[in-house]
Image (cartoon, rainbow, N blue to C red; front, side, top):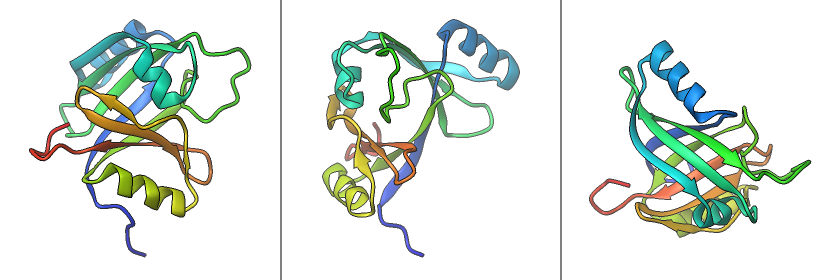
Length: 151
């Protein structure tokens, strides 16, 4: 079976956590992860990519001493009571993120393969990104790789 997308890199794995400080301490002490990027009190961008009005989040991306894949720890706030959507916002949910060379084409290919767009294509300072779900409901984030290969 051939791949559909021309992914350029497995960028990160995101894990929704109950308490960001506790999770960060755990992954630092247990596995040697070190913070490399943080964004606190995100609102408009996180609401756009998840499709959840009023949502807020704190996140830290961490590098690993044994892999190039980044671990992203996210603490979401203001999750609607009894939330039943596909966005990976409840503690314990996760997502994987891939860099793609053409986000619009990659989204079209995922949709044609049975996936669904979770929120909206969102413009972050690093570039455009979107959450999509696979046919089983697992969320995959696609990030458009910049021409220099960075996000």
